[in-house]
Length: 248
Image (cartoon, rainbow, N blue to C red; front, side, top):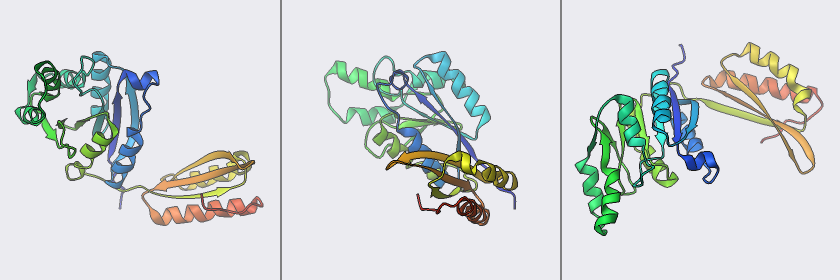
């Protein structure tokens, strides 16, 4: 049976990521969670808070992949422009979601603060809401684009609600083994295995710890039988080079 592959792109929005002031942790969580649902992240982009740039990135991604997930830029300040960007990408106006507005009004605040918070009630016309189990304002969905918060705890909560909205494909599994060998000592053998198992991703990752050089070999694919065969062959190469295969 032919493997069904469902793909996704992640668009991380925010000058603070590009400046290095904030370190992104959302991508890893999104990729791991989506893989459990049978959706493979094939691309990730980090883009600045520039409308034209975000619009271009989202439009390119939503045409090329089954799903797009954005993080960041849906807060209460002037540089939170993701809503406007998504509206522009879909050529629709921005409207106020009364459902989100009701959530925001639950927390009393001075008029000026409340006015700023109400920016988070804005959504593109036609969007459906993405639930936010933390109790704060919701994210939203436009077609195959899911727009979520940048704050990791909030993003993770939003993402956790999307499992039943995604049509997944084959789930990717992995195997790994480590050897106290340099990459160059096993490179030729790995190339041969990869050629014979094109549907298995075989990667090598060198390390240096405890004054010892080594390489971790990671195999990823949907066919677990093929994975076990590749793992056995990789272990055989390690042993043939005079090293001991070890768990990572």
